[in-house]
Image (cartoon, rainbow, N blue to C red; front, side, top):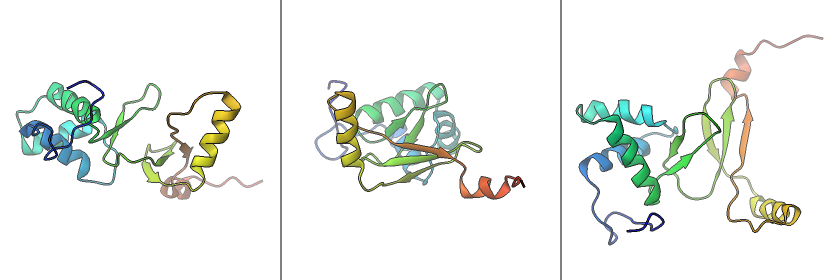
Length: 144
């Protein structure tokens, strides 16, 4: 299998090992976007002997297989997304919460950006950065 081939368990691809299945289950278990360290901690609850290297390598395999999506933000830890279809994200600049959303008009925005940059667009990933509702409510309002 090459790095770019997409496999799906039970659809002609090789079966996942117990460790890879556990890592996939952890990523798919919630509506958050866990880091490798968070996946490791959750996986250890089920399989105490699993190593961080196994979790990290499993995440890389699952990403290459198209079963999870890696979201990288600069120098910060990558997050892993169970949703592999095209969608956008909003990230809280205070607490780091990351949520999925779909923005109508992204196709037109991609075409416009491609024309302006003279690039042939392969994908676009929009990340809105700001304060989530909880952090916005906690932030003291400034009075002028």
